[in-house]
Length: 330
Length: 310
Image (cartoon, rainbow over all chains, first blue to last red; front, side, top):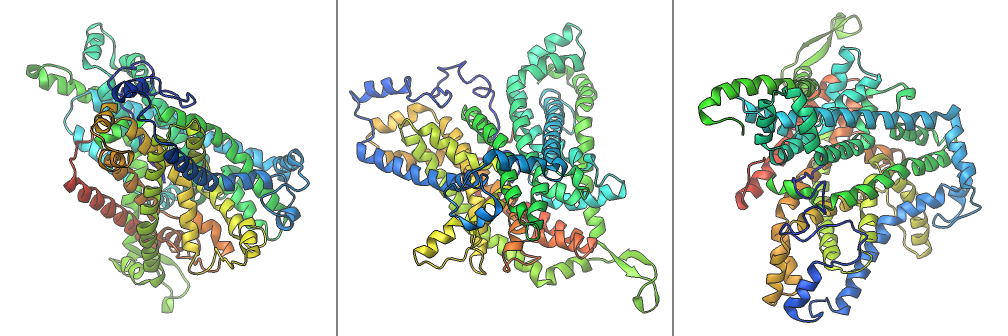
């Protein structure tokens, strides 16, 4: 699953709190427990707390949510517990409870195994995801900006071709791309993963929608009359006005590249170039012969999940602020 | 957008010049990474390798025109077509279940005025941050007898489960995918729910509609676009199913080299070294993905109002 399917409407995305009365229920970061704006109005309408759901409903709701939370968190919990165990304890002791935990010791071994190859994989992943997402964001911004603010023949045609790219499975492209890259000598290099990662048709889609609403034509016209060149207008005005969309594109693309498995699997054979996922599967593949690799795989999985979990926490907070508005138009 | 009607042609000319500068970098890479591979796959899929030595053995090899024989070969390969059937069955069951699950959670979270809403939402969304490979390794450990506390507990309770058996492994994979993406889809739906004007709910409540009626008659119809979107992306994701069966393959005898179309194409290219058939299979996969997702969009587009993208 790749394409980030949410896109931003110009309102809400970046400055969720800046237009609290814009005819919608105000959106705000989640930790705030109640809804001070809408509730008093409701109370006023019905008198007293009459619209508060009855206790029975609340109990059912919370129980259902709890069951779901157990489902989603159990594997994570298992991973945390298991990352503190040795290989023999992984097999020999009950998986949902600790046994003789040595977390730092085992995690240290993960990091130092095979001359610290894990650290290298981690750095590779960061590089692919960071550089790829940055390039994809800038390219999408420029293309989306151009499609939104200039009139030229063939504009809709180009846009539709790019849109069709969203619907093509990435893995169907990866194989022929590998054949192509082998022909031109790019396979099994950093570029083999970086170049395809820098192309995000969905990013273009998002940037176009956003720019069309957030970059006023009159402002651009004024800048032109003042004698600013198109490149300068884009860099000083366009990019700044599109910032919320750009953050979204960057985060999505970062997660997408970080999670991508098929492309590096197809492209890379030199294990020094591996991203973390590929490295861990190679450990898992050898674990039959080298049992301590079981423990390294689990510990490595735990470490690799940590940063993304933090990112998810940030993302879901950021997203809730109405990022999908644009998708209504799709 | 810019310029007045009578200056349109000049604006257009200037627009085209300026726009091309912004568009070209993206378009060049788009050509290289999207258009060229499709063209190359089409081209490769129409060729085959022929040996020139006596009796067709040894000697030099050369590529010759193969017509559609690679496609015929792929479509006559029972394993490949069975793989397609398998992902279609998978999609027909897993996608509705996951979308219904996500919708249910989104509506529950919206309805709950509990303090814990933030915690629940984060908990549900967390698995999206776990890459497919890691999720598969993780659940793989939870499926394998001997290491899995789930299997251990079930056995202790006298229930003989086998998550990796012939009939069950597909649904074990479905569970991994559901685990990963339900929270993500839920968040997309929640964001759309937030876009529904609050007055609508209030009006319904004043008219005496209960929570269930509001959900059924107001919220569900209004989040239809998001439901369509999540379904289409799930469909594309399902057809590409690869990481999960690849990671679980060493653990289960029931997963063969052609378990999903993608796995088949991958093995054809890298295990059997037959890139021409692999190219044909990749083209077939892309074709089916496009037909299905466009077909679905048309199907729902006929029933609902459809806006121009942009």
